[in-house]
Amino acid sequence: MRKKEDLKTVRKTVLMTESLSQDIENEAKKRGIKPNAVMNERLAHHKNSLDPPLMAKIQDLANHASRAVQENAPKKAKKIQMEVSEIWTFLNKNA
Image: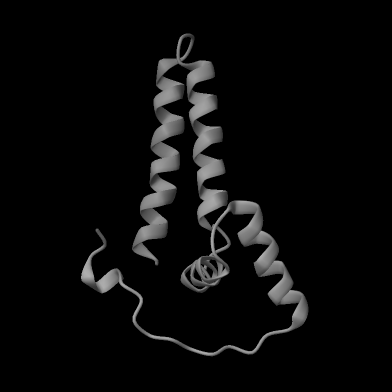
């Protein structure tokens, strides 16, 4: 269950270009979510270029890299995870 403050209660009408509308529709279809969710994500992350799908991709790459070096260089693996964690901490502080 979502927190009360996370519930969407305000409705706005937005004018946009046909190409932007199509882009939003295509992304929503590709990701299996509603266009409204795409628009909300884009609004919430407008201050940085790291949207949730890109953030997940970065985390996946960091996980693969740390697993690849874990056996031979455990300190390096830990450093990779710490550096990615710093990115998420920085983003959350500046959101």
